Each structure stands twice: as C-alpha cells, then as structure tokens.
Amino acid sequence: MFFDTRDKLGNYCLSFKIPKEKRIVVISICSSCFILSCIPVWNDIRTDSTVDKILAKLPENNKNHFKPLCGLPVSPYFSAFKLKWLIDNIRIVRRACKSKKCLFGTVDTWVVWNLTGGPNGGIHVTDVTNASRTFLMNIETLHWDPLLLHTFSVTSDILPEIRSSSEIYGKIRCTSPIDGIPISGILGNQQSALVGQNCFKEGQAKNTYRSGCFLIYNTGTNRVQSTHGLVTTVAYKFGNSPAVYALEGSVAVAGAAMNWLRDNMGLIQDVTKDTESLAQEVFNTGDVYFVPAFKGLYAPYWRKDARGIICGLTAFTTKKHIIRAALEAVCFQTRDILEAMNKDCGIPLTKLHVDGRMTTNNLLMQLQADISGIPVFRAQSQDMTSLGAAMAAGSAKGISVWDLNAHDKEVVPSDTFLPTTTDDERNARYTKWKMAVQRSLGWATSKKSPDMTGIIQPIFISHL
Image (cartoon, rainbow, N blue to C red; front, top):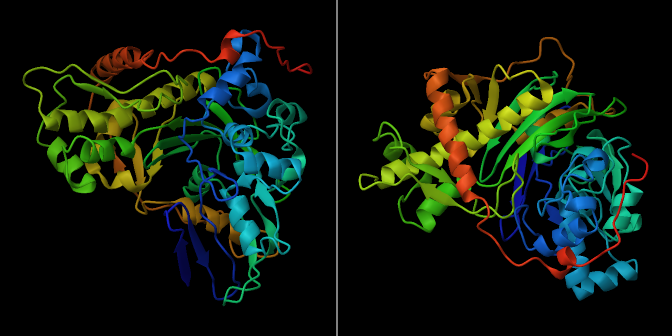
C-alpha cells in the first residue's frame, strides 16, 4: 500500500510503504535546507553575500579551505550558508535562535519531526548523508564540527542529532492507519539512488538526470579528498556498520535547460516529446555549443561568475540544433565530472548506471554513451530513490525484511546504450565544449562586497 502527499508548492513528496509482514515507512526526499516555513531551493544564490563573508576570512580567499573538514567547497549550494543568511537577514529567525526557540535541519529532519509529533515530542534527527551536505558536519567524525559551527555562528542546540541511514528512529504519531509504524530509513536523494542501483562496491557509480544532474561514485570506506572539483560525501551508513563514502559531482542545470527552452524561448511545447523528436531531425548540432550556466557552474568548476552562453551560431543554425546542443550540454557536463573522478581515483569507470525522469529520452542516453565513451545502463524504473530508501528502511535492525548482503539479490533491470563514436571524434567535440565553458566564465562581474575588500581576521584550521 502506498500513500503519497505533496505540499501546496509541490516541494516534497512522501511515500509510505506498508508490507504485509511488517509495516515500515519510506521517506524519499531531497536534502534541501528547511527552516520554519521557508524552503530555499538548493540552487538559490541569494547567499552570494554570505559566501563572500566566509571567503573574506579565509587565507587567500580559498574556497577549498574547509574541504579537509567537511569535504565541501565554499558555495551557495550548501544549507549552512542558507541558515547563516536567514539568521543575518530574517529578524524572526535571529530572535528565535537567541531565545532557543529555533530548530534547523534538512527536509528529512522536518518530515520526521512532524511525523513523530512535531512540537509535541517530535524527534529532531537527520542521517549522515543529509548532514554531510550541510557544511557543518565533520566528514571523519560524523559529528557537528565545532570550528564550522563557530564559522557560521551556529550553536549545536538548534541542529538535529546525526544518526545512521538505517535504524529505527521512532514511530509515527497520528490519528490515521499509519499510527505506530516505525520510521527506519533516511537517505539523501542521490545516496538513496546509489543504494537503489545496488552500487555497493567501490568504483561503482550512478548518475541521476532531473532538473539538475548528480553523479555519485562509491569510494568504499576510504574518504577521497578531491583535488579536481568534486565533493567528498557520505554514501550511506547502515546501523553500526562503518560509513561508506563517495565522490559526487553536481550539475546545476540539466532538465531545467529544457524547461528554459520551452518557457523562456518558446522553442518547444512538450519537453518529453519535443526534445527527442526535434533533436533527432538533425544529425549533429552544427558545431553549436550551449553552456547552461544560468546561476553559475557547479562541479567541477565551482564558478559562481559563470553565465549561460550559446556559441558557434551560423546563418544555418535552427532551433533543432540548439535543442540538440542543450541535450549534449547535459552529457558534456557529466563527462566533466567523469574526467574529474578519473583523475581523483585513478581508475576510469567502465559503465555508468543512470536514472531520473530525463532518462526516458533515448537520444540523450545514446549521446551520453557517445560523449563519455562508456556504456550507459538505464534503470527501467525512472527513479531509484524510493527503492533505495525502502532498502535502507527494510534492512534496519528490528525490521529485517530486506537483506542487503544477499548473494542472490535481484539485479536492477536496465537498458544498455553502447558508444558509437571513436575516441578522436568524442575528444575533438569535448575540446570544443571546454572552449565554450571558458567563454561562459567571468560574466557575473558584480562589485565585490565590503567583506571581500576589507581586512578581516582570518580563520584557520589549526589542527590540520
């Protein structure tokens, strides 16, 4: 039995799964910041000024200064910057923090808190995967880090308790048929898809194609500190077992570029149908390249000054070439991340597992195989996130309806797309893509904030 609920803005979805033998709850949500009734989406860049304030205190304004602690670069992407912005700019939030009446957490925190009673004894928790994306958790100790808390002027009493990804956290308290059901699994969106794809071995990776694009690579119990623009994150931690880590690369604009072609440019009417059918009517992009850096570039560049650019236009360019270039942009950005992962880990991927709404586009999947040069295995289920959350919940101690270690566990059904281009062809086109990326940089040349030009006492990681 499944129950699905969505808020009025469509910001989150809950899926409750109740097997016959044991009832459990599956929560499949992303790790965007949530505080009070305000949900800043993950690509909100209002925190640019907050980023400047933090960078101004760091030696040489180094955006990677805290990566040894939390695995993340200084970026508006992460929720600690959103929390800091709210405290600095929203009076009611600032007052609530001072009077110890404010609780902060990721979306999973808010959902579990409400399901377990909310203000009437609700449980204030998160799991290691979501906590690892806040910029406040120490990636080694898996606890809130004192130096990071000090940097953002945050006290630990407003933060949730960090727990594993698979254990019984509490029971639902409500006047409905699901009252008393244990909540036993919490995973971040991308980590949950990694689990759903059965990528439990070191060196396995999956990519999810939605409004953004998220590639995550299992590095086992080894924390790989990326030197090529990726973030170190927790992949999962099941009960008392050691944490498993991953490298992740995030693309800010993937499916959102198709929506832009429809809503802003009027080039298509139906994203699902038109992006494939129209792009197939031309054999290539006519040497057109589209870098959809609408709000900067994320991994592996981390350039908030980048802006979108379409280059290589000629008198013969049609909307079909631009639509195809938008699809290829998703694939080129994925290759950017694959190249960075290869350099960090030294072992190139031999196959890429994919899921997400955009994967229904067969042309996109073939382009991905051709541009990356490796086979693409598409899950026959578009979204593996809910499956991963169900696996974590079902395997929790005290539930035990799913054996993650089973040798005969079912292989995820998939469709395979094999590369059809030569190394020379794909590398020549990738070189042109890198040229286009360079042309997208430096467009957002806003005046530096006073924080970036003044002299401020620096922050150091003294124990490293």
